[in-house]
Image (cartoon, rainbow, N blue to C red; front, side):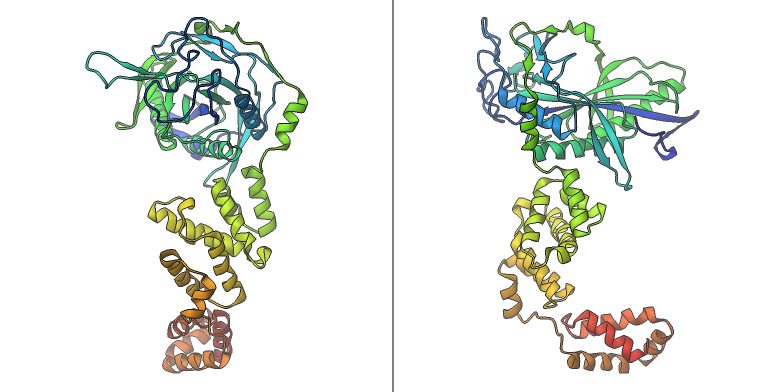
Length: 494
């Protein structure tokens, strides 16, 4: 469990402080070509009921067959979460009736899941890091989709999604704020995408969460929780937690009691509403699926999958900080998505001195490139500036061929027109002026034209920055800033 909650994390109520306790059940669609127990396609966006096998439709006599690729993905995810891998697990039937589940039950895992306890280290905006415990990860099949807007007096059922493999990743009740919940799901999504076990596309429903919320007085036992179903946006998740915590606090402070129930979040109104009273496990009459043998594999199988795991965000962040002297913030920004980290490493590969200029390259990727991409609503795959072009710009700065200001102008040209940065510097006369004689003339002229400011700078050396700016302006940004600074200090006797 987390350390005692900081006062800033507590919610002020009319009668004192309250603590929110959150646990998340994240449903992540497994990246695979076929479903968990059938060969039907998992492709998104097909015509309704076009990706449905006889097994998915629960035709009489049809038997499920486990998809080994989905099992491998679940084990790889467990390893990425530093979790216990159970060499023996069991599939159970979770019995309930719903129109989009033609079997009348869901094949899931209950007491013996494929993955046990693990953890996720989450970095918060404040710079604080917290550890969120993972209770379990189990495999289960998804349901279909009910469509209520196709006819005026009946509902339609699309079974394309029915039987698609899901990993349900259950956190421990370690989350103490909506900020922590958002950061946890963001980090979990990043890990899944690095592993390639889930694409994390929340708009398509590939990643969604059931959010369990309760409140209590600090230090008291856990309160009664309410579950908010199928939240498919990280932003909505934060809003749902904040509203639900306030709703429960209001009830308790008025002398009422919280009833355990399932609720839905309405993003248009920013509030949760009751859906049904929460079922308990015994209501589902779990029992081992008689059509599926227990799932068993060897430690060698697990070790083989572990050996093939990619470098994950935490390890990559630590390497970037150690090798390129990056701050935790910069390293975290670069590794948050593997495409961003890959781009940065491609820039490094093009540098003449990656150790010396790794920090400069990070600044350019994060501030200039990411900033421009965000402004124009593009992802990094659509960047007009390639990693090789950005590396050339950083190298030109490191060599002293161009200044930082000229580099920004060069970046703009490459962004809008393309081209080889080195050739552009030559053909457009963008080289930095390093001739001390020419720079000295400019420095003397600025000092002579501003005797009052020169006297002020001698009294307050920090004012020399104004002179640096004026010299750079007079040179069109081409003067070497360090040479300008050194000459000014010498001429002014600072």
